[in-house]
Length: 413
Ligand code: TYM
Image 1 (tube, rainbow, N blue to C red):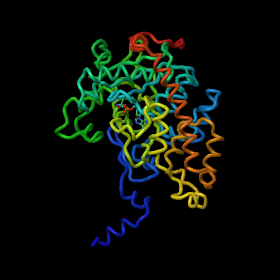
Image 2 (image 1 turned 90 degrees about the vertical axis):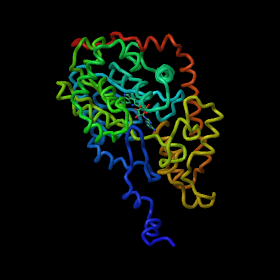
Image 3 (image 1 turned 180 degrees about the vertical axis):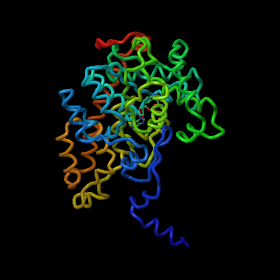
Image 4 (image 1 turned 120 degrees about the vertical axis):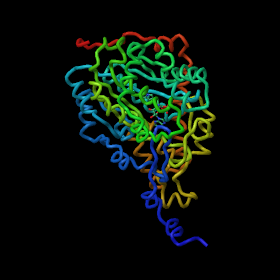
């Protein structure tokens, strides 16, 4: 017989159970027990970042003279550190730069991986600033069962998908750690300066390393931290170490940059600013894991039109009623419906999205029709991405990866 406390727990509603069960969010694991996904308010409190509010969005719009990207408008990029500082710098017509990255562990990137790059492209176009993109092939060698040659090859292939997001070659430098470290003294020097300031105890606390983790893993955070400092790129910033950096990423990467911000003042450097996004959920729902080794867990940039259609119809978790009658009387639940959630990431038209939300919630719009809206959008997006990627030759990748001066219009440099 089950014990009474078990019965009590089982009869609790989803949310109540979650209050006891912590969400896990770190660079290696994102998991939650709630069908609605991670509790981001709680995470902001835990990490000590700041929610992006309406006033900040208004300030960006006023400064740039254009509406913000829908990923910002809809709270998908929801949290920040020192973003006001970056806006002050921009307002004073002083330079800053963008830094983001990718850990190349698989050939096919999923749509979640593209989110920070789509948003970074918008930031680059809007603020007209240089961008550096780190491909951590060293990280994936250390963490995964892959050889150096494999991760280095994956970095090159992933660069093609990143370039296909539309970055400007004159303003963007993409580098693989394994390649760039061998010919950049400034990179290794910056890493050494960081390594000297962080103790094993600190990385154990931040990243949960144990005594059996390799020393490669333990020292890697300094490699991801280094590009946050402009002194790492003398080719781009003329040796200046005072150019502020803004890092767009999903919030799983924040532990790296908490460490970076902690060491920055002790290095005589500026703390990098951050904008964090929420997570793009797996097709099966917010509680399940999106994984490159499970092709049915997400939509990949390599999926064909037919695969997109089949995956959404078969696997996208539905918040609709169990029967047509039930759906018509009770309506659908957009908060847990994966197709609706995906639309919030990719449908640009606010008005249409709101119409869909209302019609689905009232039960007027059926799950099949909601899915059809999403299928059309994804087929178009992935199709266009595929075409742009096919046009990215090895030679184009090499141009992006060449250490060089970037186009940068600030007289101060
Ligand atoms: P990686 O390859 O795991 O992820 C690349 C970028 O995608 C974000 N991301 C997601 N965003 C939304 N929804 C998801 N489901 C999702 N999954 C991943 C990640 O937050 C990241 O921004 N160690 C890093 C590479 C890196 C990096 C950086 C990332 C090096 N320097 C600076 C951001 C900023 C990694 O393995 O990312």
